[in-house]
Amino acid sequence: MEQKIIFLDIDGTLTEPGCNEPPESAIWAVRQAQRAGHYVFLCTGRNYDMIRPLLQYGFDGVIASSGGYIECGKNVIFDCPMTEEQRRAAMAVLEENGVFRTVECKDGSYTDAAFKRYLREHAGEGANSELLRWREQIERNLHILPMEAYRGQPVYKIVVTSLSGEQLAASQRLLESDFAFCIHGDKDGFVDGEVVNRKFDKGRAVERVCEYLQISTRNTVAVGDSMNDKEMLEAAGLAICMENGSEALKELADDICPSVQEDGIREAFLKHHLIAKAM
Image (tube, rainbow, N blue to C red; front, top):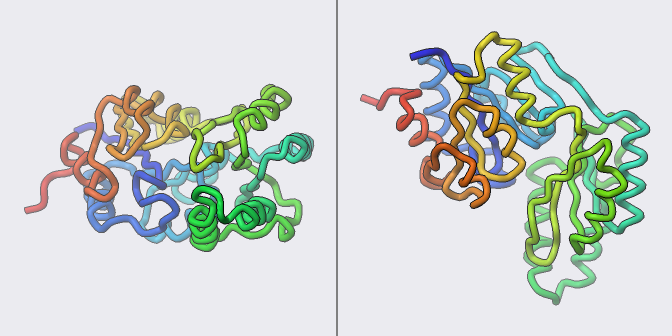
């Protein structure tokens, strides 16, 4: 078999959302694929700090911040934070439109306290209490700090939460020349999304890794679950969506594998002959 580069999203693909512990079946599959001569890369919207707990598993490289930061082995081959002008403009526009922001730097993430304050003040409405508990757990697991701790480090991406789609749409109209907005949809009365520099995305990151390793994109496999994986799946030679993934992404994928909870990574690797069955 020709050598492949396999790109794995994390949340909802390699692990359950917000988690840092892949199932044993996934780690076994990754190691078997490497023994078979393939490269295995993380390709995630998470920043570098958020993926540190996963680096112990020996991946061949990392695409972090939706393509804004790329390591192949120990070599940094792409590093593209926002300019200071871009950061200031994006933060101001989002704040003016009432959008809650989490800025992601290489060494940490920093979030508006206003979102949790809103959830506490409206705890009796809908699923706000449950969402507050989930949010606090995610911040602990992924080392997300209050915005007050931010000290001007370069920002790669801004994760956003809004009370309405119109607030995000108003922000997008003012920022669209420099930033792409990936909107994840309405959840529990809030609209979530990501504000990403137009200079990169996961698909172009796949192409950059292939160019560096001198392997054709035809010999790549991408596995993801949400629409922020769209460009990655479009760039890959074989595109796989998790069963727990979005319906829109399933429409774009070449194949659908079982969910995270059902050993999807292992089953996908076996099905597409990236690894051999255990004896």
